Every structure is written in structure tokens, then in C-alpha cells.
Image (cartoon, helix red, strand yellow):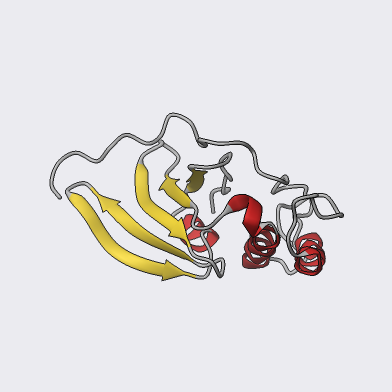
Length: 153
């Protein structure tokens, strides 16, 4: 595929905001949650990895850390019937340029294809969408819900 890469999306979602807030999910599972036990476990993990005043989780990692991403994946999996995998996203740098296209997988991991000036680049598999976002200092632009900003390193 040769040519100019497409412009990044002008909006960061194409559907509703989903059954819960990623930053501040409710303690009790949403009504449409299909796995309340998974929700409780993921919510506990989410609490353990909320950022403190210094922007780091209690383990000392920059937020969003891997534990936070796993918690979000667990919360999402608990509501899988509502959200329906896979989820498509792009990773955009601070200028809004597309760095990669990606898709989540049912286990919370993600696949990305880097977007280079002359077309596609390497295909990578990650533990979560947050891993390449942090590595490349990108925001995650979901095609089905609001963007999850990733702070610069």
C-alpha cells in the first residue's frame, strides 16, 4: 500500500460512552454486566492502580500503568456482552498524526500495525493497548468510545 496515510479521526468515538467510566468506574457492576465476580476483581485491581498526586500508581509506575490497563480490560470483559470485542483504535502522537492502527483481542491484549510515511510497518502483539501507547507516547483513539489520553513520558 503506497500513498499518503489517512488523516487521524476528527472524533475519538463513533458510538456511546459505554457502560462505565474508564477513569472512575462504579463500585457496583453496571446493570448489563455479564460477570459480576470478574467486575469485583477488576475493580479492586483498578483501585490499587489509581494514580496518586504525583501521577504514579502506588507501585511507583507512571499512570496509566500495566495494572491499570489490565483492570480496565477486566472491567471491559465483565461487560463483554455490552461492548462486543474486538475494539478498533488508532494511536496518535501529540500532533494528531497516526502512529499505528490496532485492535483489541478477547483476552485484553492488542494487535497493532505501525503506520509509516510510505505505508504499513511491522505488526506487533501487546499485553494491552496501553503498552504501545506508552512506548510511543501516544493517545489511544477508540472508534467506539472516548479517547484515553496517555501522559507524555
